[in-house]
Image 1 (spheres, rainbow, N blue to C red):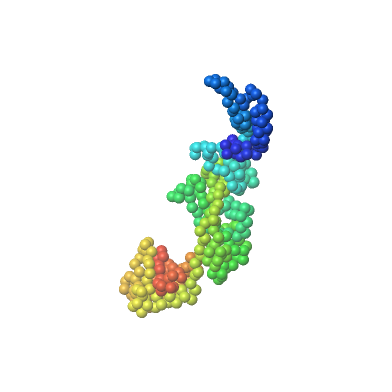
Image 2: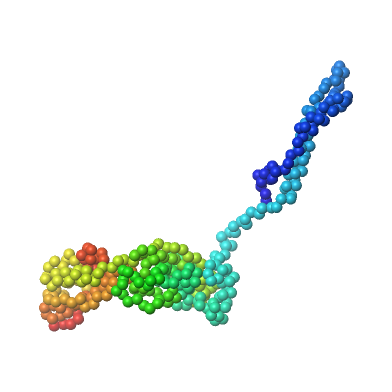
Length: 365
């Protein structure tokens, strides 16, 4: 409806007749006529008391003008177009939870797509994700956001404490990072890049073919929300119901392999010498099954040689190296220790860390 303020704004635009001059002329005419509306009798003395005709006519004009305004207002009330207020928000219990983003735009569309997917229609069955992979949000990134290269880096759930199958959650959030089109990661150039990965292909595992998109260490990151609006379960279709930018994903600049080897050589040389190795020992994982014997085997035979049996890395995006060490004791027994994890921070602090550390005898004297 049009409010009161707007009605008076419209009335301001109605031309008002000029009554002053007409009242003055009419008043002079009536004043010259005996017994006219401008005269009256005094009951006490018979004197006529003159009432100015202009005053009488002005009062009459005001009455007429008031009646005219009432008619105009009534016309405006009935003739102006109505302005409709937005419909009230329905109670929460009546709100449809899915309003559609991609590829279906409504709950009805999603139900139709589910029916077609159940019949094996390839135009819709691709949205079924029985293996709980990432192909639906990946295709969304490619077709709707124009991403040429991407890597999956994590999953979140609603509710957040969900620990079962994806389809048991109300919604599943997939985190993706956008990869630069060059396909070359300047911090991990020594790793061989797979040939031409795409958004729909397997997730990047080493980062060699995923160049950062913000600066040398940060990636543009998007969180994609997916749901099963038509049916939950292994046969239900998945749809994208939202997406948003997330905190930039960070890759760590790895240490050089030469720095890693220098640290390990200093640590192992001290163990062979029988002194000074303690300062190199960092954290030991909580699931360590065998005590770390720094200078001798469990039987008391001192170490005489060492070998770095394997060195892998750097692992993307943490930039860590993994190492396995083989120690030979005086009595000829050998002990294999794995896995040492060396990061850029380890090199900077001069410590080695044992992760999932295990020590086992490889041969007996």
